[in-house]
Amino acid sequence: MLKRIKKFAAMAMTLIMFGALTTGCGNSNEGSDAAGSKEVNVICWSEYLPDDVVSGFEEKYGMKVNLTTFTDPDEMLAKVQSSSKGTYDMIIGPANDINILKSQDLLEKLDKNKIENIKNLNEVYMNEPNDPDNEYALPYLGTSILIAVNTDVIKDDIKSYKDLLNPKYKDTMVVVEDARPIVGIGLMANGYKINDTSDEGLKKAEEYLAELKPNIHAFNGDSPKTLLLNGECPLGLVYGGECALAAAENPAIKVVYPEEGIYFTFDMIMKTSGAKNSDNADLLMNYILDGEVSASISKTFPYVNPNSAAADILGDEFKDNNIVNIPESEMKKSQGLIDIGEDVSKIVDLWTKFKG
Image 1 (spheres, rainbow, N blue to C red):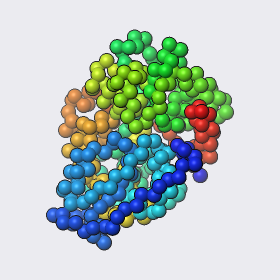
Image 2 (image 1 turned 180 degrees about the vertical axis):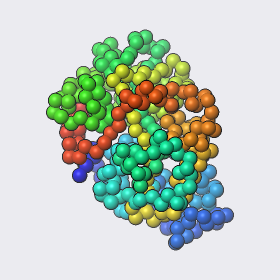
Image 3 (image 1 turned 180 degrees about the horizontal axis):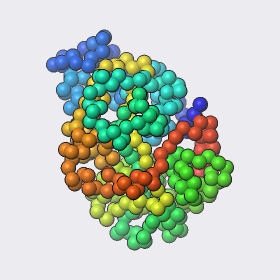
Image 4 (image 1 turned 120 degrees about the horizontal axis):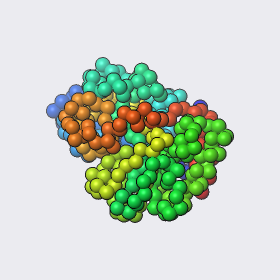
């Protein structure tokens, strides 16, 4: 069984306790569970579900969204695993966590008849390898890790992950705190696949990361764009949406698609097993997949959007942005994560040693 890396091995997770359910005074009971619940409990990446989307849903349905956030996948898993069933109704998190959540009976199959806006999802982005029939999850937004370069500061023509090892970049980089993709980049930099767990491949990845470490100023999976924009870090390995936001504010910040290929995955909308507000979770999923709502999400957080109705609303400016719409040639070279079983312990050991 896959055991994910814990951000702090001895971390004592505080269970999220919710108050008594209230019936509320909304205009509609649509989506309310049998007990008359008027709330839904969601765990989601930090800075990923816009406030106006949350408030719009609450206003439309007279319902309260209780939002818990996380800043790296292992924090999410720790919170979900350590909480009693029913603490969360819905998860917005990485596709590569689907199998571990399923194996621990933490996910419930979706009732697609209750989520009619599935029709808006582009078939190209359906049938994710970790859930090939979309039984448990639907795509929310797609993310990559790209090389971000402030061209006002760094004039070099960076083309490869290996170019980041240049000693002249000492203490200049922000790197997302996401163990498997970053270890995977170390593998890809040496010609291995992102999911390779051979001793030879991981030794090469460890050597790459050890050489990269002096150039890393900070690890930040929450808001790495801040360090790019405030001038603290002119270089980074950063999520695509964060790159897009930084580039929109400072056009000198450019992205590089490394010649070895990029890491790419979708974050998925999932419903937890034992959800206390199951119908309300269905209602929120359907709301998020509405074309107008999904378009508003992309305007706030410009990641790859799998929603065809949203893409039509966003128009050519969005479609022509090569950060939020990754070129087909780069997608063909991209790699995603799969369940590597007990071999993840090798990643744990490598990452722990790397972080020191």
